Length: 423
Image (cartoon, rainbow, N blue to C red; front, side):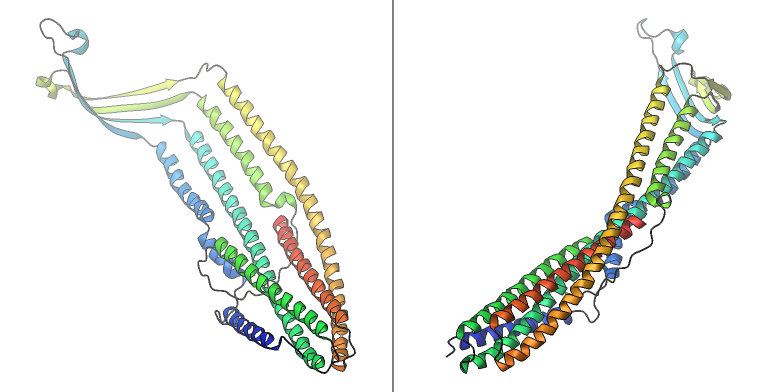
């Protein structure tokens, strides 16, 4: 006789309620499954780094206007009121102070022959604009890589939950069938309990898979800036390999080039500071020491200024050495990038090929195991199957599915990394 029929009934009832809740929460919250593009669109709007780079690009427009404005004539209004009294025979020498000084002047000045300096600064600014734009694209690629990797992890969790659900359903069918045989004495109570334990283990695995799915989904929402906590269904990412571009055409190599150009612009701008400087100045207004006759002291003045740097202790040579060191650093980084990227590309291509071969083998293995399970189902209905054989086959099926799923995940992660390096 079976002693666990009533507990089994309630276990089945609780399991059915859990499946209904799972189906509702995973299938009815959204009429359309979410795709990886949905998360990428949200992440691009949410990511603060991308917004920062976009704002930096916008601010460079104002920097360009500031540079141009700095070479236009500068006009200022300057005023001064100073009195130097003599009290009791004490005070400043009147020949120096005139007793006081009063002025209200509009002054203008401009450096001449500075067009080359201005053009260099504008060229450096344009180089900076290209560098920020390149960094923006690279940051967006990093974001795409991180979002897609996490999306694949969540999709794998969902697949694991679905596989565990299928396992429980399969074992429920066998448990129900075995009950009748136990009551007829074809199988022992021990066989029934072994199968029931295997079924309960799969129910635990299903709950663990759901928990992991929810946890990884929260992480994906965190990356994308999505505050929605409802459970959704994810579409198959359907990743494909992108063709590799030559490394010398990649954005990272372009970034090295822009960094080198920035150093050369700094070198040229340093040279400009050692060139002779020539400019003009003028002012007009009131400049007097006697307020009583101030109207006689309305006038103007014009002039030229000229300066030549002669000696600064060799500071320019020190700066040149720093520029050379910076170039050496860029060259070293570039050399490492070429070597490491080539190695990583070859390694990932080999891994992808091996993973494709493994997937083919796992599919063949699953086909054979499924055929064996169908045969064993017939044997079980006839009462001619050892329960240990059924459990062994089920473990083989479960291990093959798990290995297949892990290999598919690794293949997806390999494609993501390879596409990242191929850009």
